[in-house]
Length: 372
Image (cartoon, rainbow, N blue to C red; front, side):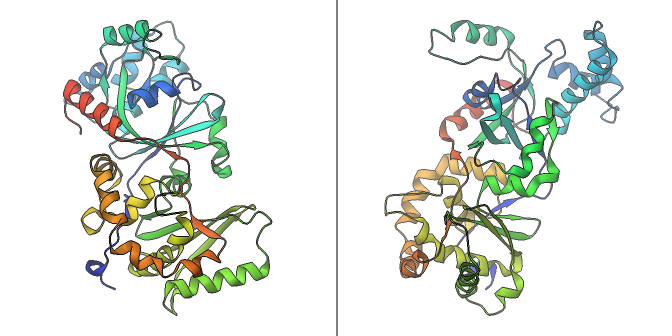
C-alpha cells in the first residue's frame, strides 16, 4: 500500500528528541508546574538573561567558562561542587533543552509522573508577579506550593502517569538526585507512555494491553499469534513484525515493524479497535492516542509539539468528524473477532486537558517573546 493511499495517521516522535527528568524540588512544586504549564529551576541570582548575555557573541563558550563564572560570582559562599552542578543544570535548562523534547516530572513521593513536551525557549518570569501570585494563592483557592523560581520554560503537559503504570525499568531514575537528568537511554519506554501507536526511527510501534489476570497459557499465545497474523492480512507479516512482551498478568505486548510495512500494524489496530471501544460514546484509549490514529493524512508526521498544538486547537472538531465517518463503519464488522482476543489498545495514564495549556502558552509567548 502506498503512503498516499493510507487514510490513517500516526504520531512520529523525531529521532533527535531528547528525554529529561526534571525535579520539582522534591515534588513540592509539581502541581504548580501543571497549573502554569511550565517547568522551572531555582537559584534566582543567575537569570536566563544573565546566561544569554554571557554567551552573546560566543556561543561556543564551554560550560566551565562564562556560565560557571556567573554562578561562582553570584554564589561565592557555595563550594566548587555546588557551583559546578548548578551551572551545569542551568546551562542544560537554557541551552540544552529544545522544543519538542520530552520531560518527566515526579510528584511528591513519586506517586504520579507528569509527562510533557517542551514548548518554548527559556525566559525569566517577573519576580514581582511571582511574589503577588504566592501572596494571593490562599485567597485564590490554590492549595499547593507556588514556586518563586524565575527561570522557566513553557511545557505542554500530555498526561499524568500513576506509579502503578510507570515502567519498572525506569525505576532507577527515582534514585537520582539531579534537578535535570537526561534519560534518553530509556527512550522507547517513555515513547510508549506518550502513545500506544507511534513512529520512531523509521519503525512503527503498537503497544497492546493484555487484561487476562491469570496470565497467558501456551494455548493463549498460539491463539494470539494466529489472531495477529490474520489481522495483519498478509502472510509475510509474521516474518516482518517483531513482538516483545512485558506480561505480568496483566501486562503489555509491543509490536514493531519497519515503516515500509506500516499497513500490517494498522490492520491489527483496526481489528482491535472494537475490542477497545466500550460503546459508541466512549473513548477509552484517550484523546491523544485516538487522534494520532484518526487525524488523517494532513496531520501525519507533525512531530510532538506541532501535534499537541493541533490537538489543542482542533480536538473537538476531529472527534466529531472521525467518530461518525467511514472509519468507524469499516471497523464495525470485525467486532466479534476482536472481542474473543484478550488484547486491547490502552493509553497509559490520564490525559491532561490541552486547551487551557494552549492559552498559557499563548500568554507566555506574548509576554516573553516568540517560541524558538
